[in-house]
Length: 57
Image 1 (cartoon, helix red, strand yellow):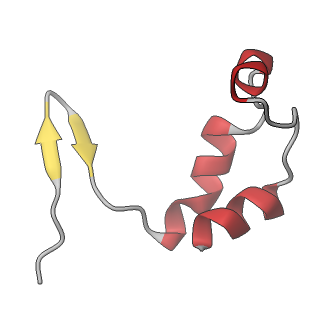
Image 2: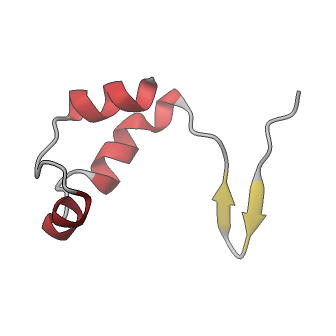
């Protein structure tokens, strides 16, 4: 079965891979923007282990 990949205007959308976890943490949670925490009602800090563990599941 072929994994779907969408490409348009220099962007690529594909399913996440386990190797993406550290970059996902760095780009989105290190640090978590305060406004994001406020609007989503989540805590203001996450550890790398929390995020990468969740990402891996």
